[in-house]
Image 1 (tube, rainbow, N blue to C red):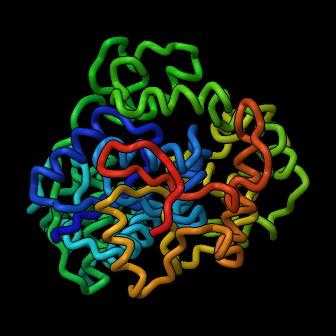
Image 2: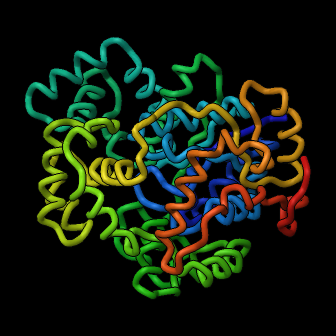
Length: 397
């Protein structure tokens, strides 16, 4: 059985993601395993829907098994995020690595990954940094100097694709890359156009916050619409808004030493964030006052959110947490019981392994417009969907 692996967040899953899943199946995948960020996503935000609902939508739209990327792994730079996610995919038996791409140029993406892993890259990068370039610009210049296509690193999907391929190279495992041309709007497109078949996830989130439901009618797959509608009616959606003051309060009560424990923290960045926290009345104001060409908004958000969540660790994932599966996924799970990592299907039987994520889920519950109760981590079973489009239920593996 050819198993394809996909790294995803599906925040929310839209028609472009459904196209990617179909294209992966058409490329020969007999089973699709997704590793999906849990309740906190890589750009350092709470996901707008619970991880179980997002995982169920993935199975309804073509995945067979969805595993969780722990929050401490998701809330990292693109490199750390990709390294952890690919590690889980390989542990789950993935032989193909499928990813969305602005270029769909597999050869150039593979070449870029090889060059970034080569011993010649670090000296070329340092040269750019010494000339005052930002890290992103110095990295792009270094790749060009080594003979690669630096423009790939300026496209979000291509940049992540290069990081996935780097992680696969460093693992020493052989995987087949599959670059699927990205359909529709760019991640940074500010507005979701009513009636548009393809919208970016960020534009869909923005439309929801602004009360515009029209893009959701056209850009969300039919299989996921009712599922999303039901949860959003319950939670009102999840975002930073309900917890902005709590985030600012946590920073105002903190000192530089506490922030310096976090990944990617520096003396200068921590000083900027603490100074901004004492001047800002909103999270957006704090981000604007803290970020520079060197410190991006995403990096500042990661620092702020990791501090609030008390997440100094970036330890690699140590177990496979199942969020959703169908009958093909059930077959994969039987194989994984003898695999290199513990398999977590019934949360009540693995309280020690899930303790950190349980604490984070209880905090995530307060980011909902209509706050949710504690204890969801241990009470919620993986979503099982018989066949490919079954009804959700609990089931033993």
